[in-house]
Length: 236
Image 1 (cartoon, rainbow, N blue to C red):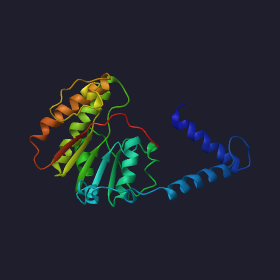
Image 2 (image 1 turned 90 degrees about the vertical axis):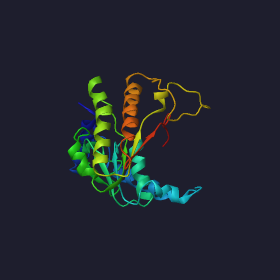
Image 3 (image 1 turned 30 degrees about the vertical axis):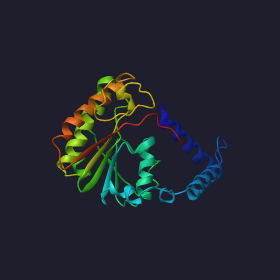
Image 4 (image 1 turned 30 degrees about the horizontal axis):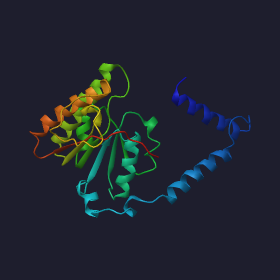
């Protein structure tokens, strides 16, 4: 019926197999081998601190030595970020999630999973209380056009306002290079660059979000608002 139900069907098949009612789909040993392979891969990976860096202090400086709260932590970038935070020595990582059905990628780490609505400023204030940094990766990826814009624009406003109200040192907001149109690779972009959203609703809503963040940054001297504009993100 849906994506989650497909996994439920697999688990029930394994349950039947364990009860020796049927021999369909997979053998329990197949599951064990998959788990062993995943753990072996994690065991052989090079940790972030093992890679050379021009200035080791740079990696820790932005963290402020405290807790880090992450929205959109179960996504492609968010999952990798959670792993990097723990590898960098952050002891308290709080993940703001919509549903527990998508936390498998980060649940292997001692992350605090907190279910909250991105529009609920009071709930967000509780999550951000005592945090030194908030990394806002979540955006409107589903629902109607109005619902997506609400999550991207209003959700960002709620996150930033909650962080400011709680005295968080910095809010890092993930945007996209597409807010500047379709720029040449050799052209640099900064705060003076003109917005020319490319890619439809996604880029337009991100551009609107950025404009609001830049206006709010002028009136929040105690909380830095940092906007990141990556291009296409890919990798393992």
